[in-house]
Image (cartoon, rainbow, N blue to C red; front, side, top):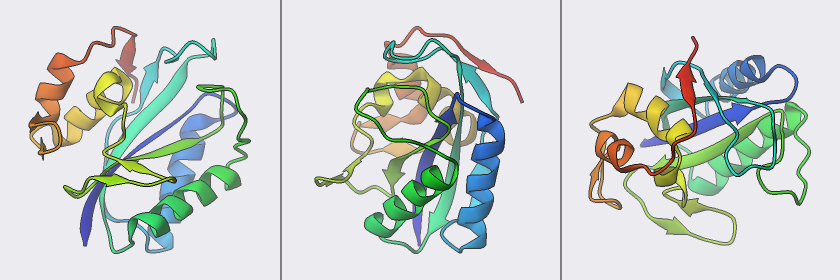
Length: 162
């Protein structure tokens, strides 16, 4: 079993429902076990491509999948939720699932980079992650999640809602 962290978010349709449904599906399919979920957060859009506020959360879970299986399962859930991939970076979406951490592994392939290459720059990722795993030491960054949050340069609004 590998301890993982996923970031979920969206700003089209019913994003909170989409996140809950995706997690139920991943749990029911045996992809994720022992889930710990953060609160939901309403966040200013990052990257400026979408004016609509996003809703975000983070989950910590265990998986028996390898990184490719996990990535495929997450992308399948995005598709089920109606996500349309386009070439506009940071565009509005129904559901986005990012793999933040996969154990203590560092992975770099054409399909996935672990740890997520911009997680340390995003308050909408670090605040919910710190809520549920603040003391998780990240050897790739040489510090804990809380320490990453403290150093985060992102000043966009992140508000816990549920």
